[in-house]
Length: 339
View 1 (cartoon, one colour):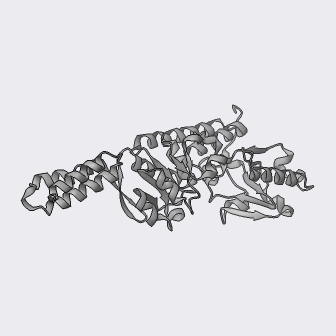
View 2 (cartoon, rainbow, N blue to C red):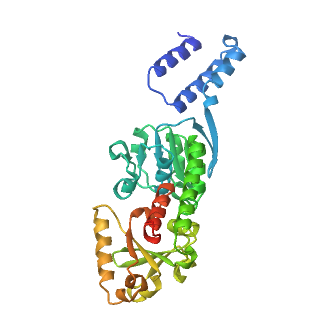
C-alpha cells in the first residue's frame, strides 16, 4: 500500500502535468501543505512554510462589495460583466476574453477584436457554462449588476464586484480597475489626457460654455427620452461647464417626454444619440428619429432653426474615458471655430 507521501507525490505529478492557472495551483499547493502537515516528521516546518507561500507573494487582496478577493498579479484571461466595465478595461490597455454580446454589436467605437471575445450573456444573467469553459483568471462586475450571480461566479474564478454606480462614477471605477489590474500608471495618464482636452475645449470656445444650453436626447420606438445631469454624458457636459435645459438640469437622469412636449428638449444645441450598427434596434431608432423630425413641432425648436442639431454616436450613452474623450471631440467640432 502506498504511503501518504507517495500518494501526495502521485497526485502532484498528475496535476502538474495539466495546465493550471494561478488559483488552481495555489489551491493544490495549499492542499498538499495540509496533507504534509498530517504526516508528522516527514516534513519540516520550513518546507511547510515554503509550500504555503509558494504562490501567495504574487497575489493581491482587493476589497469589494462582497468582501475581499485574492487577485493574481497581471491577470491575462479577464471576463468583464458590465458595459462601462468593458470600456474601462479596454481603456487600461487590456482586452477581455469574454463580455456581454450587446457590446460587440453596439459599442463599435471600441474597435474590439470580436473573434477573440466570447459572448458570455448579459451582466444580470451571465452564461456560467461558457464562462467556466473560458477558464478565466479574473472576473469583474459590479454590485448592482452581479449581486445575484456573484456566489456562483466566485466559484469559477476570483471575482471582484465593485460597489459603485459605473454610469456616474466612471472615473472612480477606472481607478479601482487599475488597482485590480496593476495599471495605475495608465489610469493616471487617462485622467491627465482627459483634463487636458477639457482645458482645450474651454480655451477654444468662442464664449463661456456656461452660456450655451446643450440638450441630449435619444429615441426608441414610441419614446423620446432626455438625458440629464445624472447620466454619463451629463457628467461630461458638467465637466465642460455647459448649461442644460431645465428638464435636464434637475430630477432623474432619464426622462420620457411626449411628442407634444418637444419644446422641453430645446436648447442652443441638441445632440441626438444614433446607433452606428445595422441591428434591428438601430433601425427602430432611425425610424423614430425620422418620425419625430417630421412633426410640425420640430421646425419650431431653436436648435433646429439655427441648424445646431447633431446626431452623435452611441459613445454618448454610456462609457468611460474612451467615450468621454469622443464626446469632447464632438464638442470641439460643433462648439468651437477650430472644430
